[in-house]
Image 1 (tube, one colour):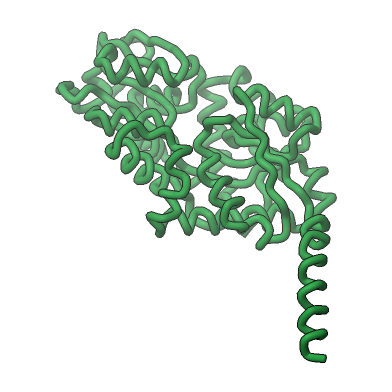
Image 2 (image 1 turned 180 degrees about the horizontal axis):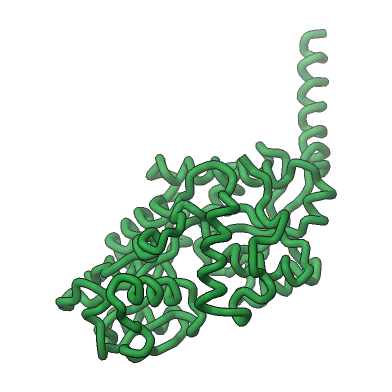
Length: 322
């Protein structure tokens, strides 16, 4: 009888597992194929953190950010990654997007190893490489900081070269610029190659009175999707935090995703690890008042072309996760 009982229990477990998994909601995440967010998402899926928190994460790789946004808008995906200012603009335009915090890594400006520059003012008449375009948020914050600290018009008194992040990275490494502004992971590789961070966007933001603990980057989902699955935002947030905890404390967790990091040297690998961990936000809800201050600065510097109709943080923008 004991043998039959054990056999029955084994059969129940074997058949109930897939059924329970099938009953879990699936989150289809549209992400850049080589995006750094894959490091966290892979840590979630490969360690079963999604199923531990009651959902199944399905990662869908895309070639560019535009494609990930189309996938969410068209209902082909449930989630993508963006900065909350962009998400605020979409919500103010009528889309029911909700933001879940992911990272506060925002980069800065690096200079060649041989540069004698000690402040932004020392870049006068120099050439600055900027990933993206003239509305890049790091560039705007650094412009405001230079004006406040030194009365220095960074845009008028330097030459700007805009380009794709990999191109700016390569040119900066070749000492073609007096300074370079790029996404955090390209800057990490620049630093690994010997370049020096002249100023971080975090430092500049703090000097401007902004709350630099406000995570700029996050996951966004449709509110209608979350309404269909109560508590899913908190469940995903818990899985995200569990992955962050693993990566913040375990070398083995990093080794497991090393092949995804595109680190060309041990120095790059270590710098990427260090800077990613430094970007982990404090746990807790986003301070909407602090976010409003940042949005106000972005509106002042970038105007409607950057923030659209989002003159203040739209109600319901930030998911109520703890």
